[in-house]
Amino acid sequence: MIPFFVQIKCQLGKSYQVASALADAEIASEIYSTAGEFDLLAKFYVDRETDIGHFVNEKVQVIQGIQDTRTIITFKAFQA
Image 1: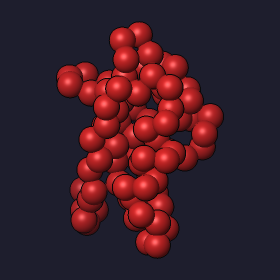
Image 2: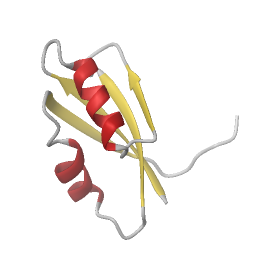
Image 3: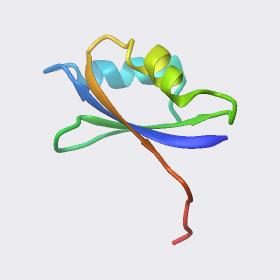
């Protein structure tokens, strides 16, 4: 499985609605509210064969209330 993160900017007043829709879709492993330019940070895992761009386009960006996204692809997890 490949992990990646998506920062999500929501339409005004829609952050909790978007977070609930993501949770209901059961596609994110973790969802956090954040401060700053983006409202939410979600962590996803996909199979190695899955195209991350298509996944974000077809599963995430279609959720009502999402205004913008930024995908962060990670390389290696370090132990603290």
